[in-house]
Amino acid sequence: MNLTAFMKKYADEISGQYIEYSQTLSVIIIPVAGNRFQTVLGTIKQSALYNRKVIMFTSKVCPIGSGTIDFKMLLEQTAFFNYCRFMISENYLQVEALSALEGTSEDDIREMLQEVANLADQYEMKLTGADIH
Image (tube, rainbow, N blue to C red):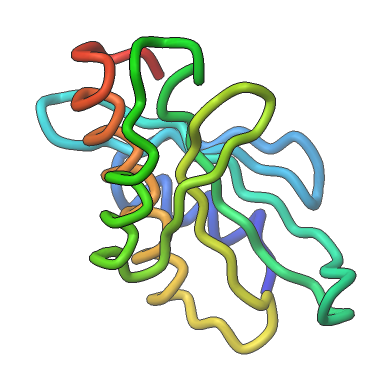
C-alpha cells in the first residue's frame, strides 16, 4: 500500500489536512466532534517481532504529569475498542492502532484512523477538560 497516496486521498475525503514528512511518516489532521481536530501520525516500520512491515497510527491524549490518570480504568476501556490501545511514549499518554501493512484494506485503515482520532479526542477532553492537541 502506498501510505502517502492513501493519506492524501483520505484527508481530502474528510476535509482534513495532510502533511508528508517522509515516505514512512505522514500526519493527517482529522475533524472530530465539536468542530475540533485531532492530529494522527502514520508511521511505517519494520516489526522485529514478526519480520514484516507494519503501519502504526498514533495520537497524543495528554502529558502523563497532567493530573491524576486512572490507568486501571484506561486498561479496562480498551476492551471496548476495535483497533486501538493506550500507550505511553515520551511522557505522553497516546492512542495507538497497529496493523500489518500488507493485507490491510483501505476501509480498515479508514476505521483505524477515525478510531484513533476520536478516542484521543474523547479521552483528552475526559482527562484534561481541554482541547490540547
